[in-house]
Image 1 (tube, helix red, strand yellow):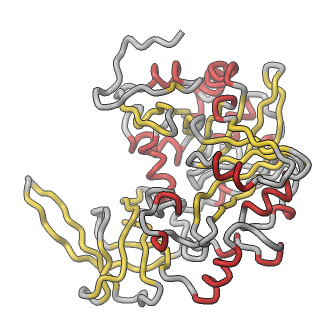
Image 2: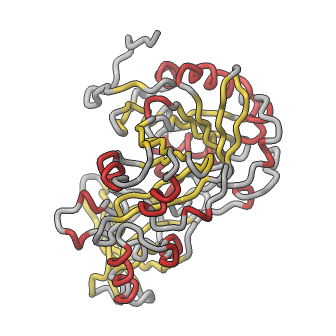
Image 3: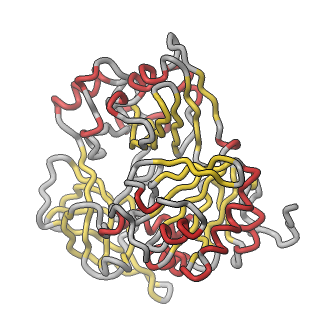
Length: 398
């Protein structure tokens, strides 16, 4: 039974508790919560910085349950998904997890996500936002069944150097041999526990998918086995820091989904997002194909880049200037990176902007007085942080 005797923050409203809420509620010392897809999850348990370091140095656990999960099945499932997504779904093998995105008829990105393939006739698609009406409309003429299974699957992200060691001690034999973007089913409490080597932190890590009735048991076993491995829960604020270091983009933060823009041309194509490799014109028709052919021919209007910025003040929402004069872009995500020991950001530049002699204006508040600092920056490759352990097979037993 969930105990709500300790109130949430006054400005946060409890919507739907996840199956792990009884444990996350007890662990949340600050009482900071946020809403994701109608669910309440922790924003911070102790402090975002401490939770960030737990993931980078030990192991962190994040409640991933609110991730939208669509179960797609039927004899036409593969053909349907090949029409929906820009990449060639036929090349994805069983037990593989693939990064995918889909566009509207104008070639602008609606959302990205991960596609879990169980067979040619069974998949689960996970996304940030809800898209059931679009998925159903796109399925007209196909023999497929699409169900929103978000509330039927509980999920935890287990991320960090000691994550594999903890899962091994929990009885998941051979977990260290699971390659990145692969999944495996394990027997757990006479039920199936699906484990994928995926995550949004850019580190060694896994995502665990289980029936909600086993959620509390799974949490308890993880934290019991992880006692000597520095296991800690982490919230959305720490995840934001981790995903920026990993160079991952976030809808509504780094780009607006096409169905949320006021003017159509304010959307972004996969080429502008840097995901041209996920557009396969050789596979035949798919949503937005004609518009994307034209977009490829015309070239991108913008370029999404990674920046290193002088100083140690994050350039939140800053403008980018060429030669300190001409505005050529804006920053969407920024932070001081503890792991990289530098100031980093994700930013949009005009497609024709030169990448030398770039400057950003950073405003800082010192004793209630705002100061403007113009500092230099340079374009760098993403990810900013990419440890060898992230892709090592077998995963090292830290």
